[in-house]
Image (cartoon, rainbow, N blue to C red; front, side, top):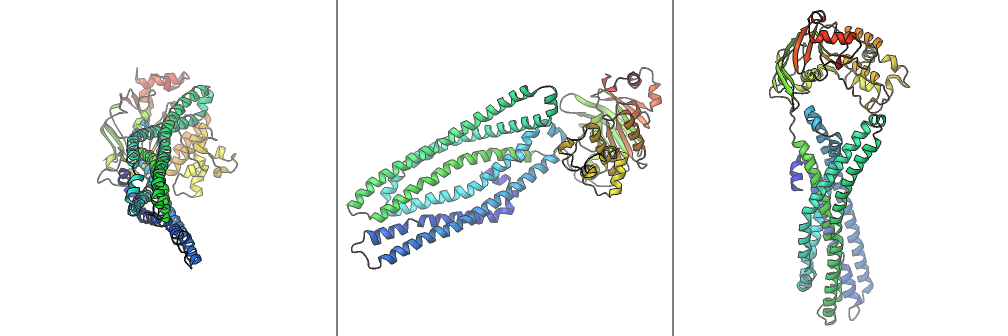
Length: 584
């Protein structure tokens, strides 16, 4: 708990006044709860058992009743504000934590996300944050008042009769020892539950996002079998946690019953002998009956704390992960002309090298095509330019300045990308084309026309205002790709990277699209990654990659004339109606 407060202090700090005031009110409420049994003593000792009975009996009873109602009423108001303040603060803390975690995840590199599971990261943003919030609120709303209640009752009981207090609390050390010994088991069980829940979330997200694959290859049974195993693991961990937690209530109830029995026996003897008034005994029994309620609440709190601590550790692991790609000291934001240079670049994803000793330059406004067999490293080269990935060795320069010295946001704003896997966000077609940019309807319409989006948008129910669903589920692959191209055209950046822009288009649409791209304003640097000959043959220069190395460079005619060259063989396969990706 203390570690979580320290780690998330920046999220807790804005709510510290509400937390402190709410905690103070919970402690104040304890005072009203401690005072509630005393009107009963006034009635019993001052009226019911008084000899002779006082003349102002009704007045005394009335005052006692009013006192009891007043104590309960004021305590309820205090409890209302304490609950409201603590719960509101908890919601604000959770909202801030959720924003921090998601914002940090967005800053982490593609390499990090490639090592993680989407469902598990989603669980950290949602359920783990909720568990951490619950822990913080419960500690202040349960731990403080319960501890104060136990301490207050102990002091009052000790003042009433030290012997009774000792008798009543004989079983408490044993109960505390058993609670302490179970805490480690609860913590381990809670961690296993959080881990299992993350695995379930990952599996569910994976299956739902690839439901077309599951159905097409009839994988329903296999995927459900895997999900059943994961669910069984989660169920086993959850049941173990429940068993550990379930031990406490019976132990506390039994301890409370034993204490009440002992005190009632000895108390009755002392009342009969005249050494103790009946009213004091009733107050003592009332305290004793209530004493184990906060102890039970504290025992139940152990599960909340261990679960929250495990969740806080998972959140902390994300926040403690430093972004591999971030602005370097002294990074500058400046308008780009579009010059690109790679100097002896090497890169790997942690296994075999993907790129080795790659060097080339692209002049501003030049159109360069990257071709080669699948897995040659073409898309990796494209990702290095806007620093979606960072090189392992060598350097990538834009306009003569290392990309590490460019301000990251400025660099990426000036690079338009059409990725091979087109990703659309939930929203309207218009939202996905504009994608956060400031643009007029005329500018959007121009991009829509150039990218051939208008060809299918006119058939949609609401045109560009049609909601396309999560990941553009109600659009075809070719339609999604044209939306991505319209987005890049609208951005009108100095550098345009097209990673397989025509892979989902038919031959006629491809020709129209190539012509539309030629109508872009002059002076834009274009990097085109493609397999189709028609897409790359008109590039100013074609660079051929193979097994992570640059093996050929030149115009289409120069490379075709190169006897025994890889590009020449690729053209031969293309003419033979085979996809270039099949060439190895």
